[in-house]
Amino acid sequence: MIEIRDLSKWYGNFQVLDNINEEIKQGQTVVVCGPSGSGKSTLLRCINGLEPFQKGEIIVDGVSVSDRSTNLYKLRTEIGMVFQRFELYPHMTAMQNITLAPMKVRNKSKKEAEVKAMELLQRVGIPEKAHEYPANLSGGQQQRVAIARSLAMEPKIMMFDEPTSALDPEMIKEVLDVMIDLSKGGMTMIVVTHEMGFAREVADEIIFMDEGRIIERGTDISFFKNPKNPRTKNFLDKILL
Amino acid sequence: MRMFDAVAKNISFLLGGYWITIKLTMFALAGGISLGILVGLGRISKKKWVYYPVTFYVNLIRNIPLILVIFWFYFVMPIIVGRPLDPFPSAVISFIIFEATYFGEILRAGFQSVSKGQIDAGYSTGLNYIQTTRYILIPIAVRRMLPSMITQSIVTYQDTCLAFVIGLHEFVRRTTIVDNFEVRSIQLFGFVAILFLITCYISSVVSRRFEVKRERGY
Image 1 (cartoon, each protein chain N blue to C red):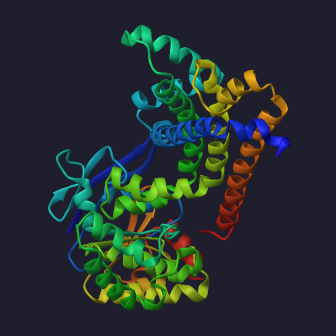
Image 2 (cartoon, chains in turn yellow, purple):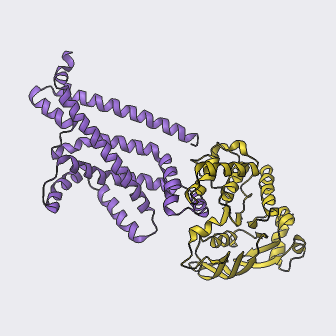
Image 3 (spheres, helix red, strand yellow):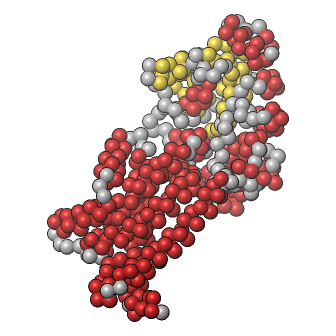
């Protein structure tokens, strides 16, 4: 589904991504962790073409992201993205947030889009909040609306960029539950997170990044009990406690 | 009604002038805000060939008194188009050129206040530049900047008086004409002041209500 080959990216002289190689198959959930500034978010942003890169190649569902002839707008409809700070549109209700793209990009009728949005709100557990503005929702509710907004485009891939880092502890679970559900439902997912409980439950692969490189990878959490790289061990000690 | 006898006698002529003031204001605002949106977008553009010309235009016009913009446009345009312009369209265009720079700077601040993440969220669902700008960037920026935009609109409304320099028969100009034969300056210009005072005050009350709303977070 996603193939990343020899990906490198620089901001000026500063190298943010250094020779990344990764393959994600359909239905897999890959968890990416690592200290801040290690290039995790940048990697996600490269995959859906929000950031250009200088070297290497990313193939999403058979389409090269960096190819000039690729329609990035079309590609992005296939890749949902959920952000750390939710990024809901503050001037629109939850319902309007979800229906905007299906109506404007997929040319769905308002009615059709709203039926689908209601279904999705049901799925993330907050159908009663459909007509609330983001300011009247808790962080956890906002993030679930944001997930519903991405799902409304019926993407083949979902990317999550630290989706629970800005949440109060009691709200983390409600968001993770939705994500676990998605993963078990067969969605292809890339999740930047430090929630190791989530990783243990659904990750098919866990990647550890540092200074723009993947320095450790493994297929299950036990792998992280004996990391080869001291940098990984140090980091894991801190987040697992 | 001795107090307002000269006003009463010439009321239809005066209000006719007021109507021209209103029309000029409406055209100036519609055009100034529309062009202002483009100017604001140009001022946050990463494309140098957009950013530099727009910035030059903004800095040029904002540093010239409005009265000179009106004056120059009225006297220079005939040389370019080869025939004299009517005062009204000439005034409308001068005001649009001038006000667009002010609305543009207000909107630039508004655009910059919109989080990059919200724009990325739009792009990540497949919206293109125009859709993201139209449905996310502009609505959020305009809502946030509404109080400043209303204030600038009130200033525009008051400034329309300056169009008298090119002989436009707006409210103040007509009052001057009436005053020339009635010789009731205090009464006549008092009437002008009261009308402006009331209409501007109402607008500022409306503006303040929007500010209160904004504090509630939309």
